[in-house]
Structures are given as structure tokens and as C-alpha cells.
Image (cartoon, rainbow, N blue to C red):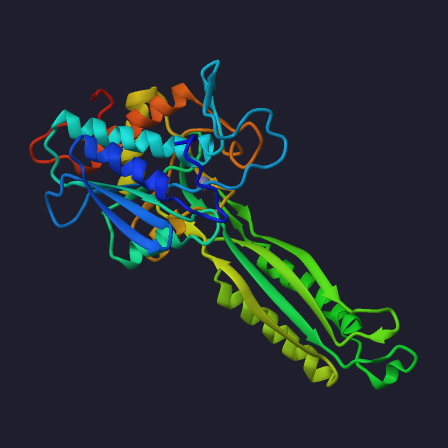
Length: 383
Ligand SMILES: [Zn+2]
């Protein structure tokens, strides 16, 4: 997988998709290819379609970020050294994709009778546009639960923050710098926006989430003016919020707009408006969901330890599966959380094997015939 580049941008997952298809077809797993857009195919492996509803979806993305500076080895070589596999995407997240493929193949080969089938979905474009996961749910590809295999060091991620980027543009009137009274200085007016944002921060970033901590606000861009002798007619501020599951983008935008409106009422020369530039919804599921129980039991069975339930510092496709697809989804994958997007990215071979066993065991728990089997997800001694 590492030797097949799928760098995004620009984004072209066709060869990785072909590889996934051939791996799954080798053992007789039915495969559907969903064309998301040009050069961007999602792969949907269907392991034993028994009933209408699939018990589980194992989900991984096929794209990688670009190789950053500082690699000491070829990022596309896939070199194995001292129990580690090095390469671009090893950790984020071709490692988990390989584990999921092997888990699906193992269950298919085992001929264990499952009560419901399960899906393996390898999607495009997680790193940039998130169009792959969205296309899945738009096409009603669904399951009772899902696992997204982003690196968590096999902790079970039940929540992550959202991302909300808002632009506030202050509009003034241009004039020569020698007669500023004829214009309206948009940069000076923007100073009020900066002050207002401090009040917004107090509100938005005060509540705390049990596993995610507080929301974050960062003023990251301020742009305005073209020359020192011209009164600037516009000034743009960009603010980045990392939001909690309880917070909505509309509420935050409405708060900013109502504060801007108040400023306008006391200063008729103040004109500013806010708009959403980017929105990725936060994600949260209950710790009591079946998928959390199944993964916990699988981790106990395979690794003989209690799984850690966690909030995650980064955004994942689980947001789309949960918020749009309404599929209870946990994030659980091999590798260090901070392992992706850095030079000499690697994943431990042992971690890959363990993850494979955990995915297969969890899939078994989620899809087995409850009436015919005694082994509940609480059992510690299966497989
Ligand atoms: Zn990823």
C-alpha cells in the first residue's frame, strides 16, 4: 500500500483502490466500487450479505498527505526495520487499512456463520475534502455500527472536536491618507472586532467536555490595507474554532453577528459581517454503544488489557458517519496518535497484527448469531 502513492492533494486513489479490490476478491468477498468523482473511487467490500442490514462497517481512508520535509528515507519504499514499517501513510492510515483488509479476509476464510454481514469501506479524500465518506452515506451505505481506523494506539475514541472557521470582514471607505476624514478606516474599525472576539472566546471556550476539555479559539489571519498612505477600505479577520459536540456553528455565528449588530447600532460608520468559511462537525457517541463494548471485549481478548476510552485531538471521517450517516462509530486504530503527518512515519508490525485480530474479533462480536452462540461480547476467552 505504501508503494502505491495516493497523495492528496492532488488526490488519485485509483491504484490503491485496485489493490484493495484485488485483495478482497482473492477470497471471494463481493466488491462494489463507488465513483465519487474523477480518479476518486471508494471501495466497498461486502463480507457475507446475509440480511438487509450489515452489523458493522470497518472504515479506512486510502489517501495520504504530502510527504513533509525531513524524511531520511524514501517515503514510498515501505522499508521494514527493527519491527517497524516506515513509509508515507504507514500510520495515517494505510496500516489500519491493511489490518482491516486482513481481518475481513480472515473472517471470510474462517467460514464462521455470521448473523449479519459486514462492510469494509476504503474511502478517498479524507485529508482534504472528506468527499469519500460523504459519498458513502449519501449513497445509503450503512451498518449497525462502524469503526474508523485512525491511529489511537488502540484506545477507543468516542468523541472529537469539530472545526469551524469564520471570516469577519469589516468594510470601510478608501481615501487618501492625507485626508483620512473623507474615508472610513476598516483596519481601525477591525480593532473593535478583535475586542468583540475576546468576549466571544469567554463564552465559547468556557464550558468543558469530559474527554475533550474546552473549545479553542484562535485568531489566525488579519488582512487589510494596500499602502500606508491610503485609508483601507476593507479588513478581513479569520478565526478558527475547535468546537465541542454540544456546540453548534450556527449558534457561534449568531453570537458574533449579534455583537457586530450592537456595534453598528452605536457607530453608524461601522460595517462588518461574518460568514462560515469551513465547517467540520464534532463527533460524539455514548460509551454504552455496542461497538464500544465489542471493541473493549476484543481488546481484552487479544491484548489482555482494559481498553482506554478517549476523546481525540483530531477530526476524522467518523464525524460524517455519526452526524450524517447516523451510524454509531468509534475511532480505533494502531499507531501513535501523533505518528502521521511527520517525517519517517512508521507503524509497529506487532501493532498491525494486534489491530487485525481486534478488528476481526470485534466484527465477529458485532455480527455473530446471538441465538446460536454463548459467547457474549463480555467473554474474555474467545478466539
Ligand atoms: Zn487519517
